[in-house]
Length: 130
Image (cartoon, rainbow, N blue to C red):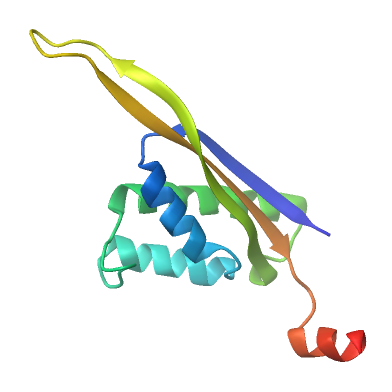
């Protein structure tokens, strides 16, 4: 099994938005996922009627990193699928106090994507399994 992994830590995006996008992208072909995210960024397509622009930018850069890692490992880019994509709670940063305002917490998110090269077709796989 050939895989490529990419991670980002402490991305300044909403965990809720990241989880929503992860649920949609899991199991998709890499090229289809990238075109969908680019269309969301251009506001040609939406997910649940929303665009999630900040999270979408992070996911596009993450998928590009994973694709570059796959090319470096010698995987066929046309056959890459998103095997695992997840968002985890990151560290909490404390932004300093300004004048008389209270300091605020900035939440972050860790993102991980694992791409897998699938070389079989579903029909062939099902026929050979029987």
